[in-house]
Image (cartoon, rainbow, N blue to C red; front, side, top):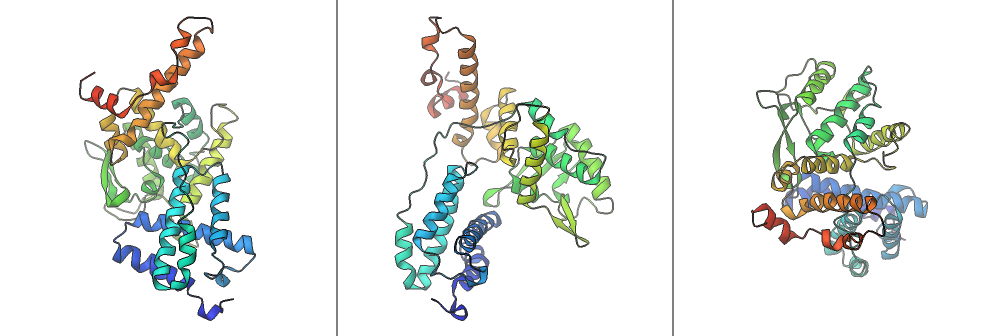
Length: 349
């Protein structure tokens, strides 16, 4: 067993996350954060699985079998989509590749990791979203008469209104807000890309109330985080884990008054819901793609498919089984392909 003093795991981790990714690979802050979370999850699993203190874990413990076991546990987690599974696997492979480049003894483990297959999405067109009534039910569970409740309410409203990713929400600073004739917020997305998203009048009202409570002494030109919590007298940016816990809590509360609230209320659900509502309201897919910060229009096509599929199911449910039209109500006929959608968008259909 490797001696603790000769443990190269943590020095490698430090160099990889602090130097190699940000300085040599020029990886974005969000990419580094994603890799860090994946590696942290692996180490937490190793610690619990082998009943070892974190500081005692070495490369000898990170065998291909253990990593495969970790990935199998992720796969069994109903909250872990194929994209999340693949992201974790890619991050672990990348780090082990970096480590193997510095320690040839790790080559065997790396080769075994390469044999672990990425997951294929069950159906890349399926997208879960909530109705406006469901979103409202969740928002109304917050108690805006308290400071914490007000913060949570405004966070959820802004999360839905902007269709932002959770990390984009956490990264919003005061200086990213503009309340002029065209109120908007600047979001910092993937790949260091930024985009300006318009704010609805009611959202601006909620934001102004929140700012008077939480940022009464700061200027809008400040780079202080918009949303924060106070720990040990210090203001700290909210964490992804706290937001997920908060949404789950309000989701459970809302389920007692609205049966349509899903079991798993997570940040991306609000993004999907906003996009679907915009599409159903008549907004062009190309504009929705820009709104969401998608690099390719194809990514946004899931909303067109989901809306069509929802209508097909509604028609099928309302059509008697013995109706001759029923045989024509099949998913294949309602499927929207990339080509068909592009033709419609360009006026060819």
